[in-house]
Image 1 (cartoon, one colour):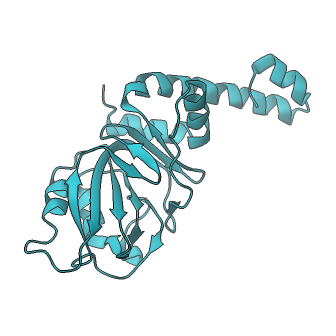
Image 2: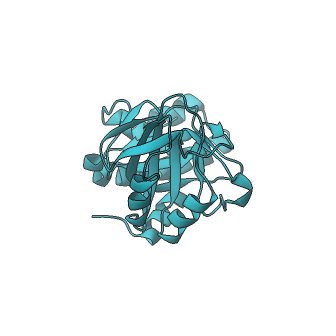
Length: 219
């Protein structure tokens, strides 16, 4: 089952990355937390959606038909998708900018995780389309990098991401929920949030930390 935009909105509001990370730990999952070097740009908020992967590499001349893989990829985006992009190499540039972000938003994409740099931030509605990346760079990607594959398993932020995995990002960081575990992780995370709310209320009333942990097993 694929969550609707409305369901993703509700889950984004109710859950948070740290509690999802706890559940993935509990299930024995490894290598699910993307590098802390990927940070939200300006007023980017949290988002949750399905990974669509795009992989780019250094080039040293303008290709005969630049941007072709990027254009095909963008036109294929669907509501609920998250753009997950790795720019592999040293030809640093602003790979995601205003126009690409606009196209993503128009197709219902929920955000972008970019293992690379962005540009045009002053012209991107980062509340509607959050971007988490390594920083900014004003240079165009044309003649510097070119996309070579899309919708294939790919390392982003040091973690192997597969198309269809859920990507959850907030101010604490970014986690990958493997597609095979989505139906298990989301209900467990929702239940733990309820438990943490109860523990928080008791601690605010001055309850013993040890007694509260012994009672609920949450801290």
